[in-house]
Image 1: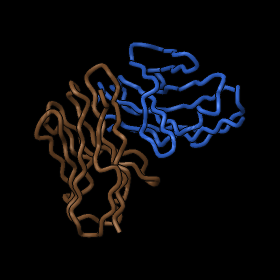
Image 2 (image 1 turned 30 degrees about the horizontal axis):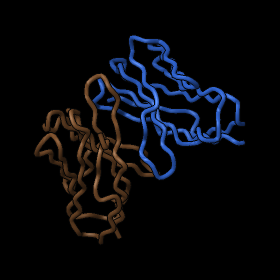
Image 3 (image 1 turned 180 degrees about the vertical axis):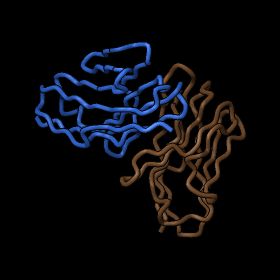
Length: 112
Length: 111
């Protein structure tokens, strides 16, 4: 298995633009997580899904952030409109009961 | 909700020495405690985990201990090597879902 796949790996955009981050979990994993990592705030859980259903989105910072999981092999995290303070590395992770979470390579987002 | 505290924030050791990182958690219902290693510019990688029905777990040079009564758990690395240099994160969760991470410990192993 290729592991968790994320795209793009780097994204540079201007303030106000829409940003869409993509994730393909490990096949067979039924949990998917979105995290944000910054120097100031560390690693924060934004939202997680179980069997494609959002379970807890209490970590989503604002209404500008939304996440979807239309099927077991794909999820998106969208920011609209983006702001400079959204600049961070966004990680997707997947897991199954009884095993740890496996992280993707991350998307480094820069909003200017 | 769960709150995880991690100490120290930075740790420098001489190659061959041992390193210990400690974490405390607040939610007594937490039952899963993984440790992640993150090298510069890379993703966090799971290196070892422990569940609440176990007090200690070892994997080669790495060991984790858990004290449920005191709500703290620790990572022990023996015979440290320069390639052990990284940021280490502890985490706690109920099951494997709503995971909360510590702030991280930057470990430097000096040759």
